[in-house]
Image (tube, rainbow over the protein chains, first blue to last red):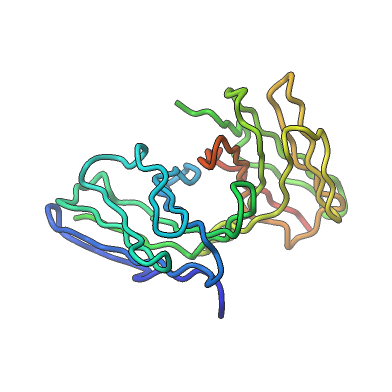
Length: 114
Length: 110
């Protein structure tokens, strides 16, 4: 399967713990996006990378959220000191080329903060 | 601030008939619009897109219409098939940032 993969698919953690999610984009895709989706809402844009450069991060939800894409391939999203309100589906997507090419989404990581 | 709105949470249509899903937006700087389909336990799947310089784009059974003056776009599915039953999201883009609506759950009744 050569689609976007995310790991883990599910994560349950206790409030205050740190969590890290991984996204592996489609191999030739230079753009990578992170979204959060809560129940009854559409995906909410968080940040995106072009190759290893993070081009937009102002919409990360707080300074507890950070993302990296060190070699321009896979990416990680970290949430520090998790809160119950962080419980959501975290989606990754990738695209090739310019700003207006379609994004291919992964299956998401469902985070539950107890 | 919800810049992209889908005011119909659900829609039911008979198989073979037309499905029309609607989306409204507030930001006149959006220059690219997309529709995604989502099945349970999967990520959204791209369906069709349209640039702001066009008013219609067609791909098989799917047609997207854009009315810039009304800040409104719609997705037409003709004929609707039971496999089209899913949640449909519209999205709009400004300089690489994407804004999604809340989704419309379409049920196509055999």
